[in-house]
Image (spheres, rainbow, N blue to C red):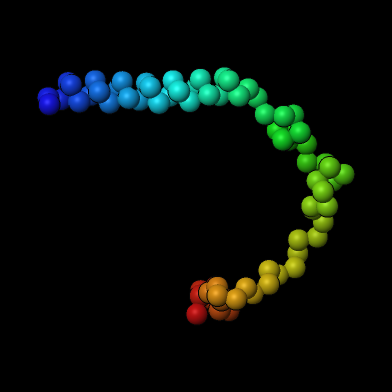
Length: 72
């Protein structure tokens, strides 16, 4: 198979894949407004926010960090 035929086959396959993805996206339509909201108000954040100044807990099975910032 020569180079032109390989590139043509690749281009055709790429067109089919992206065309199929576009078709599925068009058929499904946009997501609900509730899932695409970018409003990060504290009232709608579900309790997220607040004080994040505490240190993260040490989890079992993870690499700890030494005083110099490197794992030990």
